[in-house]
Length: 408
Ligand code: DWN
Image (cartoon, rainbow, N blue to C red; front, side, top):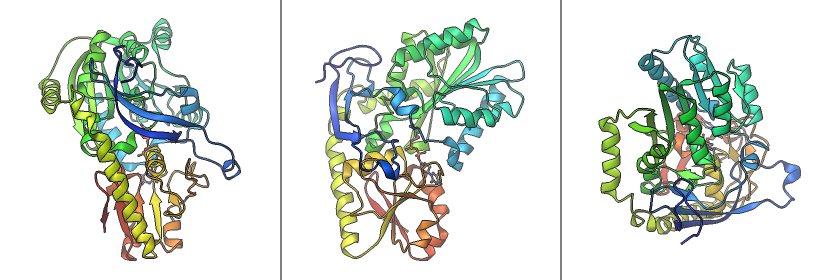
């Protein structure tokens, strides 16, 4: 039991069900000159709230340290994510009849990858993202952006300036705030009476059922179910009206909420399915730690066996989830020669904790690599499709979750 109170409903105690040890910050990639310096490590422990069903980590790393001081994640490096995002924007424009009299506000707008789909059609937009380099990139893409954290105070400020959101978007960001209630109160304040908020996050059900333990890291304070979202929204006078599920990021949910209750079957069905699966009880989460241990030992056995056979192994994707995986499993230079990543901001740096060098994907052909561990397994199809030359040369891929497997 942890005396820490639930981030959403305030209930205490919440029940810890997993510990991944003390890990470095997942996106704190290192420069060569920094490799000798001590790295900050923080406990990575996960708990369940029996009152509102929210899954959450116990540790609270200051968001300034997580998302401002040296944040290198840019959304526009994934074609699949850009396609998914454009489809979502086109849907919202059509369904909501958005035009030059509308206002679309997005929190976690990153480099403008989502809002540019509205701006290009003359629909007024406002991005909110504290990461300075990403906010600058968004401005250069024609997306006006406030480089600030979002909370109820900022929402009140924007309303005082005469702003109300016809559409409020929060994709892969609501899990990133330690002030969850102020964040949702801010949505309630800023959303127009007939507005709609579209929120996307990885599904905690997919995380548990598909062994996606590596998606747990300090940037993600919360791991959402529809049940937890429903509890959270009701507390702030919002209604969970619709739910969509899609495979992005290992399985994600999109919650459509509004100021008025217009609950559709999709919301009812997801809530009922979660109750039926036992997700409102601790037992659903209790054994997850054992399965994580199983994945760890199977992956280590596979990698050690390949190395013993003289095989060269690299990894693909200097992803935050990749940091959790290599640090928790203990995958360092003894097993992996280097990591490749298309994000030019990450190339030339080193993975936190294990200090694996990050190179351009071209290194896969320059070096005589036999196996490629997909740290960014959530983009498996997109990445494999780029590696025809590697595959034709006999290269193979290792997918680490739900169970380590080798694919051609
Ligand atoms: O919530 C978050 C999730 C949704 O995305 C953020 N906290 C940060 C981020 O987590 P992540 O770093 O695990 O995300 P990705 O997008 O799964 O990381 C993929 C990595 O792989 C990126 O560094 C980009 C890279 N990549 C690549 O090199 N070639 C990606 C694709 C698709 C590629 O073709």
